[in-house]
Structure formats: structure tokens, C-alpha cells
Length: 272
Image 1: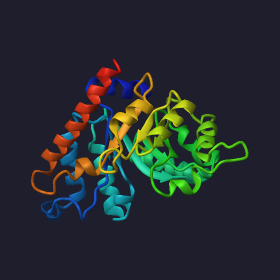
Image 2: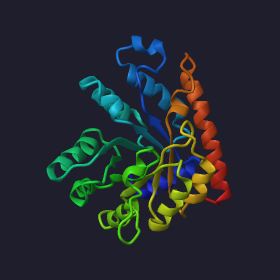
Image 3: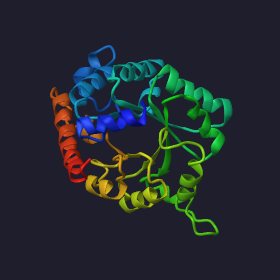
């Protein structure tokens, strides 16, 4: 998907919502476990209920690959089922050098046909650039995360008092452009989103942490906005596990619509 196509979907749907498909067999409604492919059937129902409100879906690959070949099959069926006008994110957090990265890229872009994949930048340029060889595909680079362990490395400063996450932002702009490179920026560090935006004014951000993790949608928009919206705000548990009963899809749709309505209000205020 191109940048222009993504922006157009945000305008049409009045939404910048990404639904995280962190599908856990221990949390999905018990009646689905009797079906041949419970993970896919759950995802299918969630997608049907939320596709009018979401501009992106983000399956977390770990929830699928732990089930071996059957999990990979569920993941592929899920990605194939998502409407083609909706942006897809393989949340895999890969990062390795040379041919290894090239084969990872082939897996997620050719075999699974995802629009994007999340990448850990710790190994540097040659672990990231192979993913840019695929036309109209995106790298979503981990930049400033909201987990407790982010404090271990991301805020370490060099001799010029520049934190590591800022060095990652500046250096990575040499590898990709705003048409194929996004950044993961955690919602629970609202002021940090503003710092990231100063360094990368034109790029899209994938923002996890709104909803169950406590991030504020208003703060994300205030700190992270750019002229093209520039935001994909993810909610996982708050949508897909809104209910564990027979009405799980209906409740997921209601939760997604609630977030979309808040986003539509923000888009209106921003005159987007």
C-alpha cells in the first residue's frame, strides 16, 4: 500500500485506528475452540465487526508462530481475509543481517503479503535495508517504546547528551523515506511522541498503548500530529477482548466504533 492510499483511507473512514490481532487461545470465547481453526474464526469475526472503523490490522506474529505450522496457516488466512484497502502490519520485530533479513522480508512481504513489518534496529543498516527492496512495502522501526525495559537502553545518552532513540531516528532516515518507513512510538510517553515528531516531522507513527495500557488518544494526537495525520493508533485487548461471550464480535465492533468516533472528532478539529 502506498502512502497516498493509506492517507485516503484515513480520510474516507475518519479514522486512524489499527486493531491489534493478538489472538490468544486462552482468551478467545470457549465455543470457538470446537472449530477446526479457532484463531482464524475468531479473527474473521473481529475483522467483519471492525473493518468499517479500522484503517489497519496488526497481527502479533508471536501469538501464531508458537502453534507451529497450524499457527502460520491461521496467520496467512487472517492476512488474506483482511480487505485489500486496509493496511496490514506483521508485528514480528525481526532484525538480523544480510540474507537473513532478506529471507525475513520474503516471508512477510511475499509469502504472507503483509504491507509492513516491525523491525528492531539494534544491528544497524544492513539488518534493515533488505526490507526496503520490496516495492510499496513498509518498515516500521522500533523507536521509542513504552515498556519498562525501554529505560535500559533507549534513553542512554552519548557524549553530546543525545539519547540513543534519537540517534536511531536520525540515522534511519538515511535508509528509508516517509513513503516506506514508519516508527513505533509508545502512547504512554506522550511528551516523547513530541520529541520524536521534531526529528521525523513527515513520517507515520504506529502508536501502541492506547486503551488497556493507559495511553491518551488526545495526547497522542496533540504531540504526534502532522499534516497527513501521521498516526496509526493501535488498540488490541480493549477491542478484541471486549467480551468473551457469544457477543464478542458485536462488542468488539462497538469498542472499535467508540475509538473511531473519538478519532473522527480529532480529525474534524484538525480540519483534516
